[in-house]
Image (cartoon, rainbow, N blue to C red):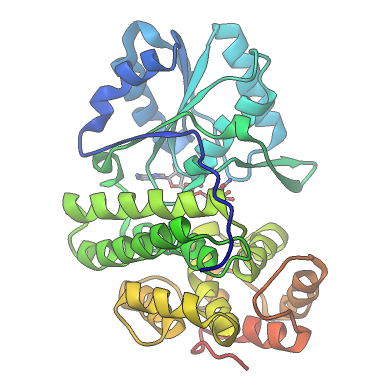
Amino acid sequence: MHDFIYTTQPSRGVFGAGSLKHLGREIELLGARRALVLSTPEQAAQAQRIADLLGARAAGIFPRAVMHVPIETAREACDEARRLGADCAVAIGGGSTTGLGKAIALLGDAAGGLPILAIPTTYAGSEMTPIYGLTEAGVKKTGKDLRVLPRTVIYDPELTLTLPARMSVTSGINAIAHAAEGLYAQDHNPVMDLMAEEGIRALADGIRRLEGDLHNIDARSDCLYGAWLCGSVLGSVGMSLHHKLCHTLGGSFNLPHAETHTIVLPHALAYNAAAAPQAMARIARALGADDAARAMQSLARDHGAPTALRDIGMKEADLDHAADLAMTASYWSPRPLEHAAIRALLQRAFEGAPPSAD
Ligand code: NAD
């Protein structure tokens, strides 16, 4: 066994179908009295339901979360929290809403920021990380600060039943990507390795069982359990080539988050396969397959998710620039970055070709 450091993150998780009923108790345990409920416009009805459930403990709702957390939206949410006298925020939704919660935890003027209770309804995993993103003047900056880590997370699979088929698969593979890269992280450790392998297994199994049966609550539960595990890995160890490529593609070419992850992951795994054989063996075992990269692409294809960047808005003419951008960011990768190989990887991802190490 290699030497390692393991730091526990201070976060409380409440799991189970119907666990939303514990919301009042959890707010009380946070020592809060008035919660501002955050959501996207699309999930405003769910936010209202949360406010109704909270009754006198609801300060109001702010249903205006959008992708990439524009700083203007974060400031408006902080102003609204102040105006309504909120002493905590409840974020119901995916990574965009959790991201808004994190921004007001960071920027809000309550002592130490507002504590956040997150209720995830996708598998993105942001609720388990101290990583935040803020977009100012079109540039998204990310940072790490323990204040933004939600104090409590309620994982209620009933709230994920409405997640459309395609997003269920792509969001699940987005989560798997955190665990897959966590397995070959420079600072990986035995605890996170266990969580990563189990997270991949639970999500892959859940995704397969959701096929044609989106209301399968057991499969939804397994996916959310997997999302918690994979999100914990993302919050604990460093990410590598795959996340940097997706950050570049999403940030500079405006590609959709979960779909980009789904398409790129098999190719990033193939790129690193020879340099990280133990990680690949664990990923393959979790997928019940021999080859991790090919099995990841099959998981997406077999369940109706996209496998080619050209199908989600990428232009072939931009691939050279994308490869240049990927090379400029400095980050560790088990296999060092080689421009020609990264450019070839992007070409294969663009075309939806089989993953390959060349
Ligand atoms: P999202 O939050 O942008 O949600 C996409 C859409 O799906 C929204 O309209 C949302 O309202 C809707 N939606 C969410 N749950 C639903 C449900 N159960 N039923 C129906 N519709 C639902 O998407 P996402 O993929 O969850 O999050 C992506 C964002 O999160 C990106 O900006 C990414 O950078 C960020 N993220 C951050 C971290 C982190 O650690 N900071 C981790 C993962 C993702």
